[in-house]
Image (cartoon, rainbow, N blue to C red):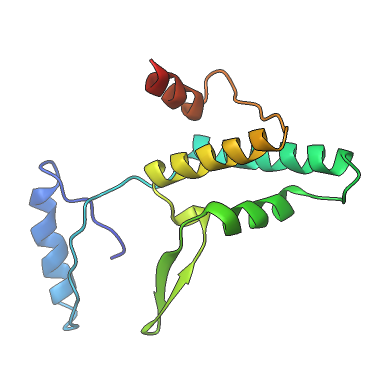
Length: 140
């Protein structure tokens, strides 16, 4: 089992999940942490839109040829918080936007927005995107 969202509405299912796991005869490490939703599709779409816009604007300056993957790697290196990944008992800290929760992704997008603004780059914030709604609510 990767994740189980424990909540008042799912507590009855928890015992069955645990019984099924224990029936395998294996030992398990149990850790309970507060549930946080992973980044949203809206946030991910906006990030890739911005990566493309930044790449196009920087390429037009004549200082190099950039694509959205180049920009993604650069900005991820600057602003993405490292997350632990454990494989075969070895833990490494990686920077991956895929591992961010919605709050962390919002902060990441804010940092990209500021970075671009400081360099005179213009980013599109679609009228109905989650990021715009959050910024408007924050500024209300």
